[in-house]
Image 1 (cartoon, rainbow, N blue to C red):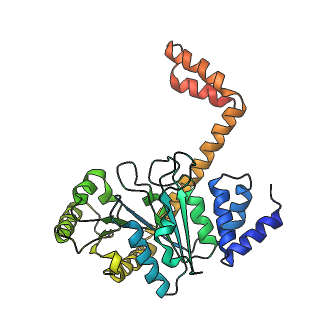
Image 2 (cartoon, one colour; image 1 turned 180 degrees about the horizontal axis):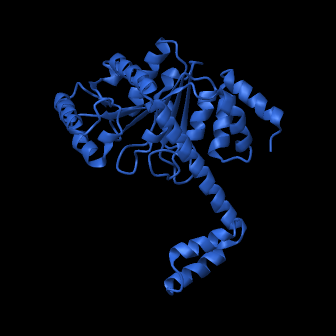
Length: 318
């Protein structure tokens, strides 16, 4: 366990923008270090200022290229930008596999940009279980904008809406993304829809299809109306319009109370996850494996119902 002054020194270095300190703090998060409780406590006074932008979409739509183009524009505005790219995990090492940092190398020498690939480690939802706390590290380190790029998008991969202030759904023409978005429930999570690779055939048709489906959605009169934009991220085309839409959504969310609601929901889910993990550990500490099997056998034999069995198991925690 690190001493308090060591934790304070590490956080001070991170707030000065030292990449090694930021990397070490995120590694503590990923490794679920025993120091993590103390680190999170020390970070809290410095959090709450960053705008978290989630970018999600099917593989091949150009998420990393779009992220890089957006970073370029945000840096031109003088904003410090942190990027968390959630990659599929290597089955051998558990580490990030795709290596988005390689694809964003043009920003590697910019002290105002920090890019980190994190492994999803098999976690469904497109995000790593440690994502909320890693976001807190970058927030406390003083980044104005944090871009969270997810593994993909689909029925089980829409958790980005729970951790982002603004969600961008990226699509591409010729991939059937419009229909897939409707089927997977993606229309409900996007704040901004971007058809990338708009120089390809079918871009206008994909945009019209999306607008039509969004118009059919049942939304309150004062709700945010997601725009559908077209970009060619590899050439920077349409990115200024995308950035303007992001700013407009953030302003609306701040004034309407949506931003506070999302952040409260995010915190509630994080607290719940930590509490459930603690309960699992405590169940293990009281030797519940054998007790659980005994109770399960009684349920199978119809001697006890599963709710009563669960109550009995939890009695050992009180």
